[in-house]
Image (cartoon, rainbow over all chains, first blue to last red; front, side, top):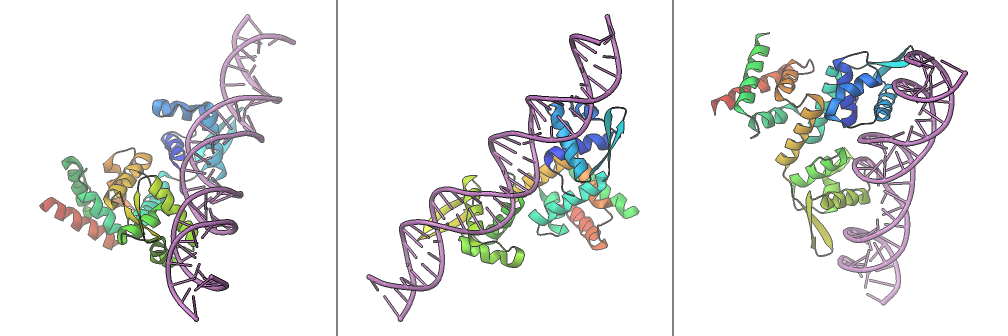
Length: 121
Length: 121
DNA sequence: GTACCCCTGCTACAGCTGTAGTAAAACATG
DNA sequence: CATGTTTTACTACAGCTGTAGCAGGGGTAC
């Protein structure tokens, strides 16, 4: 499942705390957006319609919960990036990450550490 | 500069060989798409308009060359992914990559090797 | 029970994206 | 040159995305 930018914002809010009402989402977004309440509602409706969220009425308010996990969504997103921009294979992406001049020494350190740990598993 | 899926396809063709005519691009795409010639033309025109390509007429045919590098485009794409899907920071992405269960042993090996090499520099 | 506020279900609408058609100019070729 | 082939410039149009308005139902506080 591919998510658009606005959809990611909403899903991020819901993964952070579920179930969430539209108002919860709006509040969670804080000053990350200047959306109207109804904009959030529209996004939630679209996400529910495409199967990313479930809706359940509690009193008169709809509560939303994720039907897809953050992991799944991330996997799709990474896969999409890989296909569009890196010829579909993994190595060029990693190559790019480690050689990107925007990568700070701290980031590089993080990378090394993570890899080392993953090797230990 | 963010590129859409179709734009990536065209840019990939042009990075592979520039300058390219619309027909060159279409041929380069091969069976990756079933686009009409005019679809390629439309994409090229849009990319030129948004400053990703330059156009120069050779005889009666327009030749296109990249104005942005693959590196730049990749950087933007990775940045976009990072922001939408990984809270904007690098570590979670790498964390995800190394722990992704879709990652083959070969990929993991690649990752380790690349990191090790980058450490050597 | 009326005035207010919140929530819901619709509808709207512009800009972007994918995909292409058409008309007309330019060229190639017998 | 007349005809077929390429190429170009322009236009089209549906679906997706971002962004929101409106009308009406329900609760709440007097």
